[in-house]
Length: 207
Image (cartoon, one colour):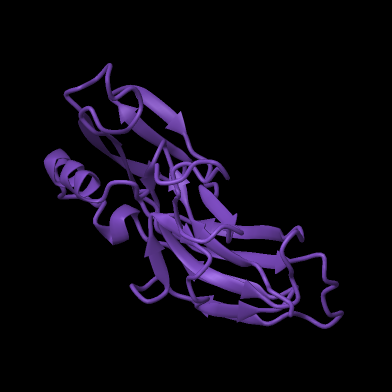
């Protein structure tokens, strides 16, 4: 019996601050695509089409595609869209502390690819990424982020993203160039169980 791979997507920015996007992704596998134009699928990010912080090969696919198809999809911010302006550092730190072993990423999917089998290589072409107009960067006090032990007080920073100029002002006078990129893209693991999205390495379970 053939088993197809499933793919989950999220998009990340600036060391864990997530951008909600609509992206068109063309999916191919080692199975030759039809010579006719593939189908275009629309996949919104809802509570039914996303999972928060883990990969699990028992998760039922929310969409089935064929090689050569295109998927136009949304993604959420971290923590099922709880990572957003108005949240305090204490709010976000509590969410992390209340959900140990779970990554912050909200993944859209999984997507079932017809004809692909375990061990196959899947090629995914990102045609376009449309980010939101803001990003958030956070360092959780003593929990997570960049150098949490060195900066135990923690901090949260909201940044306006100027997509006309493709820059963001990280600090007064500190201008950072922007380029959208896919932060988390992965296939279902062979091993049963839930595996954190941080990081998505084969040997890192429950981090």
